[in-house]
Amino acid sequence: MRFSRLFAPTLKESPAEAEVISHKLLLRAAMIRKVAAGIYTFLPLGNRTLKKIEKIVREEMDGVGAQEILMSALQPSDLWMKSGRWDQYGPEMMRLKDRHNRDFALGPTHEELVTDLAMKEARSYRQLPLTLYQIQVKFRDEIRPRFGLLRGREFIMKDAYSFNLDQDDLEKSYETMYHAYNRIFSRCGLEFRAVDADTGLIGGSVSKEFMVLADAGEDTVIYCDTCEYAANLEVAKTRTTDTPATETDNEGEHAVGEGDLCPECDGLLKSAKGIEVGQIFQLGVKYSEAMGATYIDENGDLKPYVMGCYGIGVSRLMAAAIEQHNDEGGIIWPMAIAPYHVEIVVLNYDRDEQQELADDLYNGLTGRNIEVLLDDRMESAGKKFADADLIGIPVQVVIGARTLKSGNIEVKVRATGERRDVPLEKAVELIADVVRELTAG
Ligand code: ATP
Ligand code: MG
Image: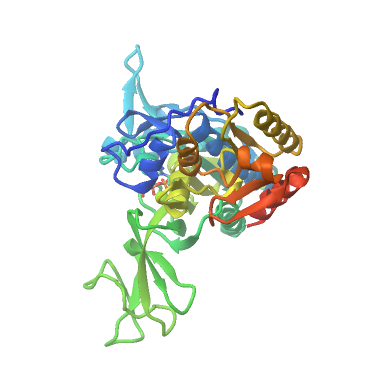
């Protein structure tokens, strides 16, 4: 892609409304634009990153046998009446009426719709276990939409639902998803932790949240400095000092905090801020019983599906990645989710030799399936370098008068600032090596 043609209106200053770093940089680097509070348009660069995250999510979901569907965002109220959540959900649910005065909601989540689908179309035990997923827009009229993509009112979620034969079967699906989630967040280049979690409005018993550790996080993660114990503060437990055999949690006297005793070993608890990028739930029969959703078992008896559900905040993940990967210059995209792999900054594209060199390199790299942004704009070197750092493409390549004189191309790794000169005749190969190294992590 040529930068001169790219729709990327970068900003020098942070808009006043942006409080956290990811929001500032998403706006400044022309990844998103605001439509209304908590509602955004993804511009070409942001959209490319979003699609890369979605691709990783799809590969891992398909890899564990989940099947992709696409459900409607517009949902009739009757299904929500059946589950009892039409009243429970409250003002967070965006509601509207059609021309016949019938009630609808813009889906905040899809348990009702998918359960209705399964009970009509997956009637036999032979079809189970069945896991369906989608990557789709969700609507929640959040009381405080803020922090850009971290808490939107319209956002993109991957939601998966498993229909299982019994509790044992559910535990297998849950475990499989747990591992798939670990792979997804690792592949996206995130530092994260799976923690015990509250089940909130979704319900069910067992649940884990996946937390990206970052100061902008609205959740508090309590974790042990010695063992694997980690929990959202909402459900964190500690061992009381007076009666070491008993556990206590945040429901009792005492709020769990830093320095308290771990409930599972002799370690001490610590706390950190986290951004919830995903959550998995063992729902059990909550929805199937409320909605009368049953399958026919091998003896011909009707049994309620035992269900699980599994969400990832795809657009939130994009912001969380920036919270973890940035510096004063801008974004530092992990290779796997960067809008492009390499940016070629040409200092004087109007000079024939530089143009020729840049175009050759561009063609050589794209021929190797490397995604390249070529800055061919008639802008100052300073502006081009600043934009390159801001947008955060992992590898920067500089072509200028010096390149021609020395016969070497300067290659800079965005994350470390490390620069190396590579000889012109080997440039394609050596830059491809750098991309490969950074992909491997
Ligand atoms: P939160 O506690 O942050 O409000 P939640 O627990 O209500 O989130 P879930 O119902 O678990 O959210 O939804 C699955 C995933 O969708 C979450 O783990 C999160 O990553 C993402 N998500 C939820 N609400 C929002 C939002 N308002 N904006 C962006 N992503 C969101
Ligand atoms: Mg959640």
